[in-house]
Amino acid sequence: MTIKQTIAICLWAAGLVPATGVALAAGQYGPGVSDVEIKIGNTMPYSGPASALGAIGKAEAAYFAMINDQGGINGRKITFISRDDGYNPQKTAEVVRELVEQDHVLLQFGNLGTAPNTAIRTYLNENKVPQLFIATGTSKFNDPKNYPWTMPWDPSYQTEARIYARYMLKNLPDAKIAALYQDDDFGKDYYTGLREGLGNRADKMIVATQSYEITDANVDSQIVALHESGADVLLTGAIPQFAAKAIGKVYNIGWKRINLFLNSLSRSVATMQTSRPENGIHIISAFYQKNSTDPQWHDTPEYMTWLAWMKKYNSSGDVADSNNVYGYSVAQTMVAVLKASGDNLTRDNVMKQAASLHGLALPMLLPGIMISTSADDFAPIQQMQLMKFDGTNWKVIGDVMSAEEGN
Image 1: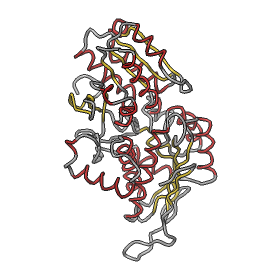
Image 2: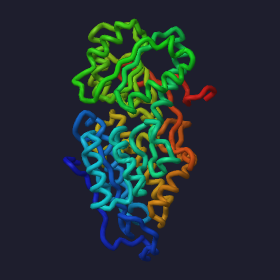
Image 3: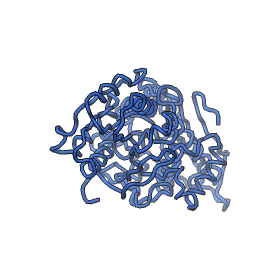
Image 4: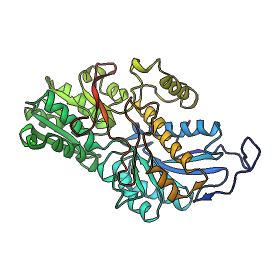
């Protein structure tokens, strides 16, 4: 599928009726909904510094195409309008206004990035437009009291960092920790979560921190400074482009005997290949979805169904890219909400259904991890599992964990 500025899946047929031949009963509809159509808006960085993550939008489009081929949602086909924002918050705000005011979408779904979602959150909440299952784990987006129309999908970055801290305290109690993070809410959440997880040992164990800007050419000077601190553990909070550069620099300067923790957003095999796989041996990261390159899943019905979908609907995508598992799974979550909404496809009811998910099991999530939300807690995923890279694949090194002790 070719993507320039817009992906639009418009495969619905006017006058569609159910197999019984009986017309759909009149429903309650919000903008962008009719008896035959549901319009969904989305922005993705198909260009710019985070363009590797544009694979998510392509996977979402491919999943909705499959749903449309199967008859749609309660007889309605999805029109998915996904536009390029280049990971530029100003562009995101501009595009989203067009989607809401000109394209009249029912909701925004899966918009990617902390800064881009921050740029549209107030506008969407003031206009009571659902901002559902956004692709960021920044903790501030789980705030149903103040932003009742905004819901994340990813585990929070603070939760992830606290899980790393739990591992460090147990397995590396004498660690000297350095942290590299993007200088925004996304990156700072990792540092905050690290400190929270280490508790009263944070000041002693953390010996150096460095941040970078999204406009920087590289992180070479930051990695050199962190190396000179004497640290033997490095935690990154970086998007794939900068994570790959950081890994490459770590090994180019001969920073050996380093325990490197790579944030989950950047731990796809594609990132590891960019930084040279041999440089990534023993790197630890956190997962909540099945790794498509892990042979343990390859004979399972869930993986084979995903692979068949990739071949038929997303053939240009890389089966080794975890973003294609992500897009598949988050789109399944959106479809579950739309199905639960029935013929009451108002913005209010869709938001209500999104906040009423209980133990939703998705085939490509790791065993034991399910989707649950409530009116008071919009975080759908709150557990992860640590894995270590062996130069080819990621291997499990522990049980499913939450940020808290005891699970």
